[in-house]
Length: 216
Image (tube, rainbow, N blue to C red; front, side, top):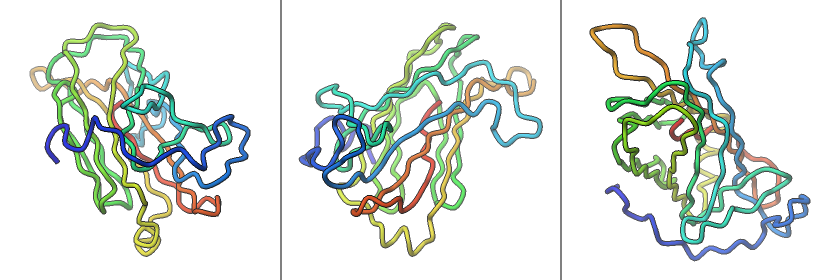
């Protein structure tokens, strides 16, 4: 996937079936809901690593209009077949220098990603599940509140049969950012983010749960 390819133009799929007023009474189906958390105190390390930033917010917007995506039972959604912009807000205690990197690997799903926090890149998601585009950041970044935009394009229809066949019922991906090592010193951890997305069947029943975590 070339940088920016397939992004920037809104898809043709509409919002029919989404619960626009948030009361949980959607007329049709909601394919994906989205929840987020900071995982700096639950990063899988023993003991957990010390981080110098925390994820303090996440919002999802239509890329073409800037309007927020609908909610389902109070949860944010990822409408299929549309270009979406996910805005991560982090509160950083220290500067983010050039050379800061991120790394992530999924469990139970053939997807991993790594690279520079500061450089633009595009990453394809396996099984035809779309792609992620990151425009890069103007490093160094100052301490304080920072917002990172990640553009996501998902397919118009999820391959539920294929996901079910592969028994992909609980998939997770945590993304950790680390500062560049200086003179062989131990890495300094900046941020750990976790996003949980749940797939719903056309009948509205939860079908799969998986974690999808772009950059922290």
